[in-house]
Image (cartoon, rainbow, N blue to C red; front, top):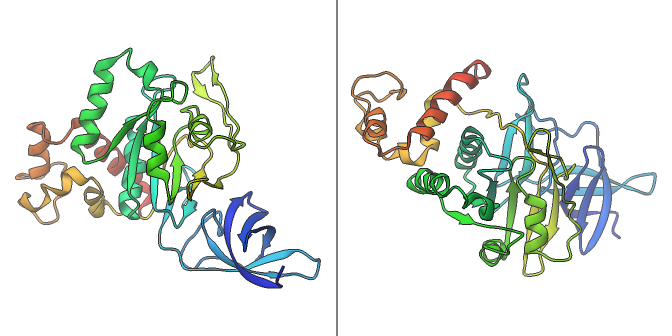
Amino acid sequence: MADSGLGLVLKSTGSWYEVLSEGERLQCRIRGKLRLKGVRSTNPVVVGDWVRFEADEQGGYVISAIEPRRNYIIRRASNLSKESHIIAANVDQALLVVTLFSPATATEFVDRFLVTCEAYKVPVTILLAKIDLAREHPEAVEEFHAIYESAGYRIVEVSATEGEGIEEVRELLRGKTTLLSGNSGVGKSTLVAAVEQGLDIKTGEISQSHHKGKHTTTFSTMYPLAEGGYIIDTPGIKGFGLIDIEDAELAHYFPEMMRFLPDCRFYNCSHTHEPGCAVVEAVKQGEIAYPRYESYLKIMDEDDKYRK
């Protein structure tokens, strides 16, 4: 192997990084001084990064530089933190795995993830998983479709155990770098195993005591796919705190609200209390789903203290 080169980060453990270069997988460390300008991140190097590396005196490899990113998915590192945690970089799309039962994915979690994808220009498709269980409650499935399809999102119903929707997911993945995300226990790893047979993906059971998923993926990992492209399997995420999104920008990342913004009486309308607000009127008329508007209000209220 050459003393230096360019490679793709396939796995990040926080201290070691697996880098693919010219068909060879290298174990690399990072230089202590390596930091991204302007980004207070807990993890300067992430899965999906293209990096420069060089041999060190101990016979190993060190990441010396990160190539410019075309996009990334980011969240707040913790509830009380002003630091960010970047989940993955240079992705073509995101697939958000959502379940309505066993466990139930909170609407606000879904909306925070979608807002982040909109803000960082990452196309996203919602995978409604464990659909075989959800169909026992058809009204819940119908309502979910109504809320998110009216907002402009594509929903694919999948069941890894029944094989439903698997071919459609394969078609989505083909030739693209895809981030797969969702809460713990929604079946991401099981879904990956069904889509790409032969991948060594851990799967876990639902904790019966709390009906929440056990963490099965410890670190984000990028897997090459047989039909081209990569899938990035991420640890189950409990919360999704937004970062670097101003109050005045937030409505721009709700596509269904964007349609009504030009009709608001005031150019700096917050869409909460102002007279002549076209967004509030659209909510009243049922043209914007109330759960989505409720998420907008919660994000404005709860995240405001972090955006000082």
